[in-house]
Length: 158
Image (cartoon, rainbow, N blue to C red; front, side):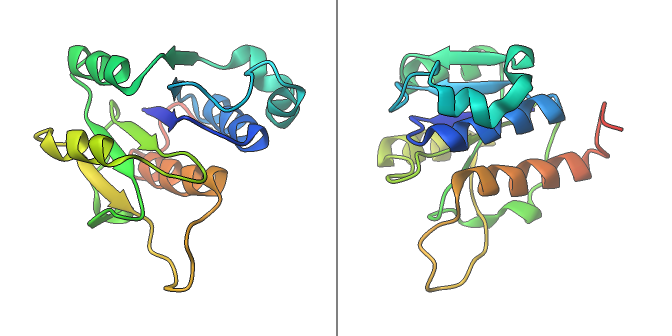
C-alpha cells in the first residue's frame, strides 16, 4: 500500500506522514513540487530518526504519477471532502495507492476527473461535522491508512 501526497505544504505534516509510512511499511510518494525543501529541518524533525528508512518516491507532476500508476496497474483512491464513498466502506487491497491533497487546496478538479475515469479508482471521504472544513492532513492519512491495514489484518506489523 502506498501513501501519496499531492503538493504538500506544511513540513511537520509531511514529516509526521513520513514517520507513519515507515512504521506501517508504506512507501511515500510526493507528487509535484512540495512547498518546502524535503531537506528542511522541520520535515526531518517530525520524521525523527526514521527518515533514513523512508521509501520516498518523487514524481515531478501528476501526469508523471498517473503514468507510473497506470504502468504499475495500481488502483488509485483519492481522499477528498468531495468524495462520494466513505473510506470505511471500501474494501482495501494490498496494492492500493491512496492519494491525499495539499493542506490548503486539496486536489484540483483534473485529478478528481482522472481518478473518476479509472475503472476502479474512487473518491473517498472521511465523515466529519458539517461545520468542519477539513481535518489535519497527517491525521487524515493516519485514519485512512490504519483502516486499510486493519482490513488487511495488519500485514507485516506486530
